[in-house]
Image (cartoon, rainbow, N blue to C red; front, side, top):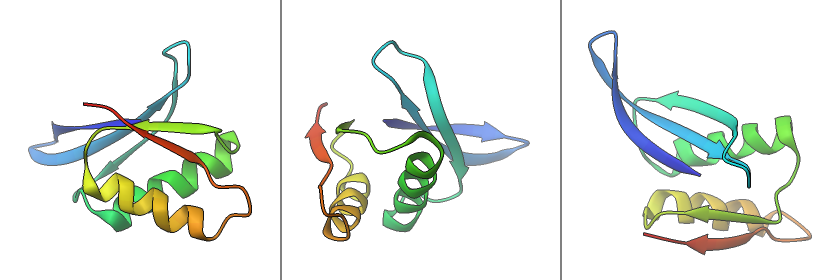
Length: 85
């Protein structure tokens, strides 16, 4: 999972994107803010549409880590989180 900042119709947005092991895009979401709420919404939607992942690799963003930690507190089997630069 990664995110980047892009301009859409003259406004800057964060593009959240998840890819599988082969590099294919699994899901994406455009949001105005990069915060825990946006990351949580993205993870909830991606999991609902594509199933539960065993491991999620994210960058050093605190918002992504906080969202995954809150998601894991509600699950019987937590999702393994790996951080990478």
